[in-house]
Structures are given as structure tokens and as C-alpha cells.
Image (tube, rainbow, N blue to C red; front, side):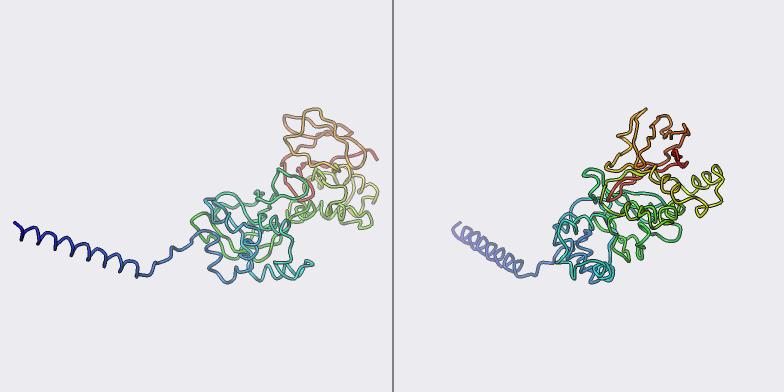
Length: 322
């Protein structure tokens, strides 16, 4: 019996020693790091995104893009950031004020997992905010007519890099915060409006809608078709045939200064005073504007949020009293 107990004790000691050696061996083994497959992790592993990662880290967005998400990020390359910095007073990412840098970066981020096959021509919402609204985030115009172009300036050069918390699309230019004029230029449905805004440089009207003085602005923007119908209705052969004062007064009749009026803030029979000093009347079902002549101008798209105001799209040109 005593010998049996001795054998059992010896066996127990051997087991304990073996377990200890096993633990020591486990401790000595190198720990394989878990790959970071989040948007931030993928960007950090790509040397062509070093400036993007630097910018994200500076404003604490790197942690955000390691979160659950999902997010879609239009990621500028180092070359894109370098070209962008040359248009600013800043020589490096470190010099860009944090508040401005935050909004620029958020202007490249969309909520949800948006693959290239999910994109179509039209507007999507980014996570950025401009000075015009503290609640309504900025719109981005996506044009898929030839590849994918964003706000008329940035092309997707590599799409659908999948991350655990979303998707990355590589772009060739930094997308600045768009003004009203920027959005008008980006959308091919507004080429006549852009031509009208810039036809008489002496008016300074395009400059006004590109800036922040007197902003925010609410712009009721007629489409190309609306301008075509306007020329037919008024008998003018083209923009060049319209007297400068008539064109300027007409354009100002489509602008409300000092207000970022979202569609949810419009009410039936609301009287709105425009930049020209003349009024339009809001009507519902369908949502439209009545000009001083009682003409119906339908609002066919709403709430294109810009950094210095908001755009609602019209199917007809409003006619003021001249």
C-alpha cells in the first residue's frame, strides 16, 4: 500500500513538472498578431495612404474608422493630398487646423457599406458639415457616366477594397467642401445655370454664391430643360440675347440670402422673399413655387446641402417683374 501511494505521489509530481514545462514553452512561443482588417488597418498597411493615416490620426478619426461602422471611405492617395496641400496655405498635414481637417476627411466618408455596384448618378450624404447647417450633412454628387466621379473633381481609381467594417474606394483627388457653385458645376443638368451665373462677371453673382458673405443661401436651381423652356417662353435666342439686368434680376429671384431652408421647413402658402426683393409662394401637392405671375414651378429635387447653403431643383425658371 505504501509503495502504491509513493507511486501515485511520484506520478503527480511528474505531471505538475510536465505542466509547468508546457506552460513555460507556451510562454516562449511568439504571439502571432491579429491582422487589423478595419478601414484604418488596411490604410495603415498601404504606404500610399500614409498621409491619409496621418490626417486621420491627427483628428482622432483613425479610431472611428476602426469601429463597428459600417463605413464607406473614398480614400485619397498621398499624391492627392500633396496636390491638395499646394492649393492651401499649408505645407503639411500637421499645419492644417484640426477643425477644418476633420470636416474635409468626413467629406470622404459615407455611412453604410456602399460598393461600386451600389453607386448611381445622383446625390449621397457624407458625414461632413459646412458652415450653413449644424445638422444637415453635406451632399456629394456621384456621376457614373464614365467610371465614378465625385463632386466633379475626384475619380475613383480603385474600387471595392473590402474591410471588416466597410469598404474603401481609392480616389485621385481630395474632395473639398462643396459650395453652391461647386455643386452646380459638378452636375451636368446645371450647365446652363452655370453659364448664366458666369455670363456677366461684373455682377459678381457667381463669386457671391461661392463664398460665405451673406450666406447661408437657399437656391432654387432651374435645370437645363427649365432654361430651354424659359428661352422659348420669353423669345430670347440664348443667354447672350438676354439683357444683363434682366438675367441678373432673374437669377437673384431664385436665391434666398441668410437662410439654409430645408424642404422640411417649407410650409403651404409660405411667402418667401428672394434676393431680388420680390416674393415667391410655396404650394404643396405637388411641392412647387408660384412666381409673381402665378406660374407653377415644381420642385423636383430637394436638400442638396452645400457648405454655404442648400439647393432645391426646379423644372421651370421663376419670372420676376422687370
